[in-house]
Structures are given as C-alpha cells and as structure tokens.
Image (cartoon, rainbow, N blue to C red; front, top):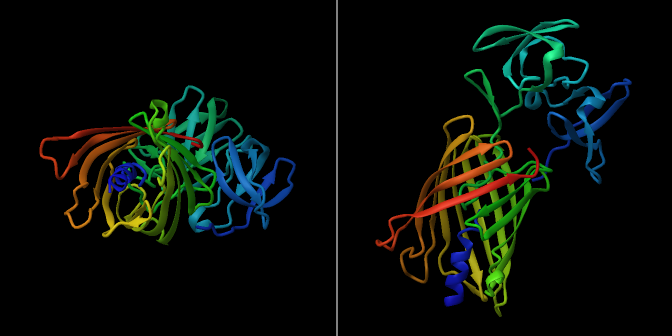
Length: 355
C-alpha cells in the first residue's frame, strides 16, 4: 500500500495521429520544382519530406526557394516565401514585417516595387517601407490572431496544463524540455502531428534515494479542428533502486475549445506493484489566453484510494507566460484534505527545442 501511495504521488507530475499527406510545392531560385510534404516552415528554415517518401525529414533554408506553395488552401492559405523575391501584392493575405531595427508591423501588402513595399496596418494605416530596411517577413499562419496590430503567435504550449495533459499535441519535429521544482524533468517530442512521446525522471539517486523514470506516449485525434479533440495516452515506468517498482497509468480524454482557450477532462486507471486502482483518477483542467504572452490556468486532480473520498486530490490556479525561448508556469496548489496547508507554490519552466 505504501508503494502504491508513493507511485500515486509521483504520478501527479507525470500526467502532464497520423498526419494527412499533402502535395506541397517548393520552387527553387533556379525554377526547379520539388513535390514535397511540408511539415513546418519558420522564418529561416523549412522542413519537409519528399512527396510519397516518409523515411527522411529534410531541412533547407527558406532563402533557397523562390516560392513555397501549400496545396491545402483552406488550411494554409498558399503563400510565397519571404526571400529575395518579394511576394506579390495580395489584399487578402496578412504578413508580419520585421525591419532591421527590430520594429514589427502586421498588415496587408497593398503594392510594391523594386525599392518600396506599402503595407496597410490596423494601427497606423498605410506604411511605406524601404526594402533595404526589411530584415524578414513572416506570413500570417492559421491559428494566430491579429490583436492591436500585432500578430499573436499560435499557442505551442496548448498540449498541457500544469501537470495534466490536454488532447492538443505537438507538431512533427517540435519538442520541449520541462522542469518543475528542480527535480522533476521531462522532455516531449512530436513524432507526428498527432503522436508525441515524453521521457522523464525525478533523479532522487543524487541523494541516494529511489528514482522514478518513465516513458509517456500520447495520441490525439482532432474531431473538429480547433474545437473538439480526443486523445489517449499512457505513463509507464519503474522506480530505480526499489524492487517491484514498476508502475503505469492509462488514460483517455477530450478537449473542447481552441488552442488558446479550452477545457479538458481526463480519466484513467493506474497500476503499481501488480495492483490496479479500485477507482479511476480523473482531472478537470482549463486554459484561457489573456494576452500575447499570457494565459490563465486551472488544473484539478482527483485521486481516490480504496474507498476513501479523493484523499490525494487538489485544486490549482495560476498562470503561464510564454516568450520565444522559454515558458514560465506559476501558481498555487490547494489540497482538499489537509486544512493545515493553505497553498503550495508551483513553479515550472519549459524550453522549446523548435520555436
């Protein structure tokens, strides 16, 4: 029983697919045409498979292509890459333009010539920019928002709350490292757009104690994109330095809402020392975006024990601040059974592998 309680406590931090092939097109500066499946395009690089071949994920600089064309117009809004060949004027397409002095403007390209680009912004109206002052241009991507004349980026941290998962997932090739309270460590990788894998440990061996290690796959299925998702996952591991320390948790869940504002319900059963839990564990969690970089989060976990009424359960409330190279989670946890504890602090960071 003591071993089971230990594993349940450790699982509090551990609760934290397959893409459809599209024939996209890359046009090189020498007018060669490549049929590909684009996985991700950033400001400087584009990652892709050769069409019909999924063995090797390739990566090239955006500047090597005259045009990058997506087949799925409704999802990706075909656009030309921002290379030395500038995009044609298109009043239906939004761009974020970054100048060499790091000013950022979001708007529609009205017209251009060899020397100037005219951008219509929502804050200052029409703006004429010398092309020699433009450092790079990023096309407006699905899932972002134009708020106050700025492009709010897609929420790349939509797949987890403080410790519970949502049924959003990482894209193929994305990943992050997460640390909570110094000792909790986990890395998660996007194997496909709907399948990710987490690897983690709590290295108590540094203090001559038993150390849990685990693997955590998660498969998600978008039923209605950006509105309703289903998912299943598992956490399976062992406690190094303890006999019979194997444990596992199998769960399923659903998420309602967009990547920016959503609510999730998860439920599952745990197994430790060959003994199944007699009742399921479940979580109720939510996230609301309140700014370009800020989110409010509540993450609430309910863990029963052999007929008792959720003795290891707690509520949590806090926030998340996201910068390009680091994410900070902070809040308070409120146990439901120990009235002597007012609130336990929660502090975690996540560092992306791919921005």
